[in-house]
Length: 259
Image 1 (tube, one colour):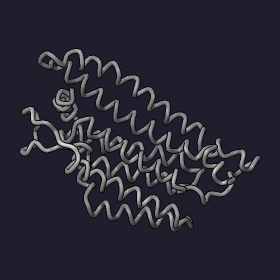
Image 2 (cartoon, rainbow, N blue to C red; image 1 turned 180 degrees about the vertical axis):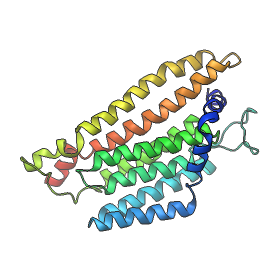
Image 3 (cartoon, rainbow, N blue to C red; image 1 turned 45 degrees about the vertical axis):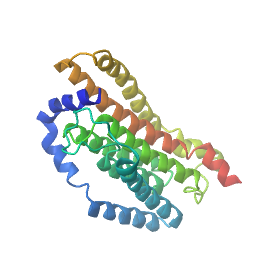
Image 4 (spheres, one colour; image 1 turned 90 degrees about the horizontal axis):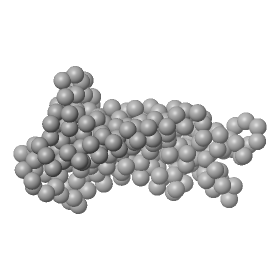
């Protein structure tokens, strides 16, 4: 299924590979260092060393764990399908991990009021980079989804560890009782979650189509379906994951502050 999706990505490459490669060229080690510094400066400018440290920690942890998992924990069985000269494991995607960790860090350092919009921006960036690695045949869909989940997991740990404990009461009538509406269950967050759920629902029949035809030689429609399923899964993971991360600043965050 993964190899079928990789073959199907050649279809999309005819139209967007040039833009995708330009985007991927930005994801470098100097770019990662600049990202960490930008996150630190943004959080410090907002007067929160706690968020700055947690956000920078998420970026570092995501990218270090990605390389550890890819090179020392997991391996890809050699079935003669890999397009790498050494047949090495490519899960998780390093480029997607950089983009996803940046997206999560942005949400962590953003104030409650602007957090849903930051989640939208982060999801779009993560999807763009993840899709670019797919359409350029750098990675399979599972590589991209794994990197997204890794960044989101570290982000959730940061929230659980107290990244947002220095937030004051929500603005507006009701003070503390407004936490849920101020950053959690808002229209932008719900819309982002809905996009993720719809993309996930769309990917299911596409994956089943690919699975049922996996025993036979993949046709062009099979490759197209697998490619579309991988793209939809990328959108689903990024959008739903970022929305859930924002929802963590709802009642649970408020109850921690009251204690």
